[in-house]
Image (cartoon, rainbow, N blue to C red; front, side, top):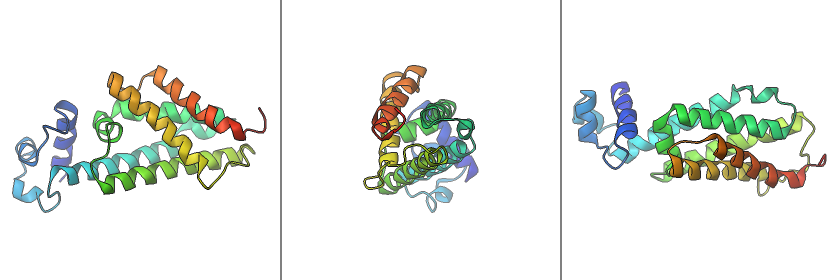
Length: 186
């Protein structure tokens, strides 16, 4: 299956999801269709699998990033937005899968879990700094802030095919403006 997943990533990058198919993946990977279908009955199941893998990797990347060394929640937001943009820009298939839109219900669930996890990182970082103590949990303002950042990145990707430094700046600005209402140190 590793050959199939690698071929799928290349095809997503080269021809996009519309022109990616199980028969084309079978040809590109050298794996017979009959061996692929039990794992991925259609290309959307394959896309959902790859999206979940990239969301997990992105979450792991952020957990291991230098963002933890920041001194304020605002600099943490900047560091996480940059690390996220770097991940997308270095993994074009992840950009296609995660910034163009979801392909199914399981994909939506994975997006939600990723955003909740990153929101949890934000909440924990702010708490460790003694900042944003009144950040609401219902609705979860930290997760809403993450959604704002991803909305900016999706816009930038749709416009430019990448997440540019200017889009990163706007994503950070949107998040800090939203969360700033709970910043007692302003």
